Figure (cartoon, helix red, strand yellow):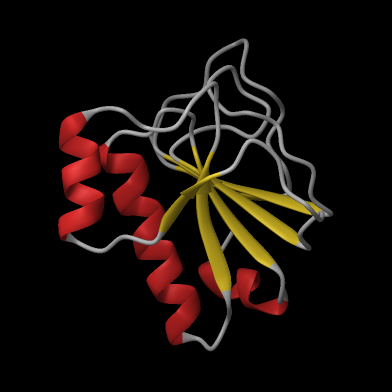
Length: 124
């Protein structure tokens, strides 16, 4: 997959894994920046059992003004949901419905990982 392939979509949500860490938030934020520079509107979200509570993550997001939102669910199915730093349908990513899904990840594939969607880039 090439990043340009994502530009064909207009309704885009970038989803970090549940209880995101610094690399999940940073990679999602970088992707958000790329999309916005290419005149696309997107949201950066994470889900899971509860909002972030790690002091270092809250400080990072506040100081850098990272526009990340906690979402238990999505009101409408986006045209594209991009899962960063995790696998869509994996154990640490709440499955949120979308018309098309993509994955950008750096973790090695495991035997219990879900099948990757056509729009995927995984480099372990």
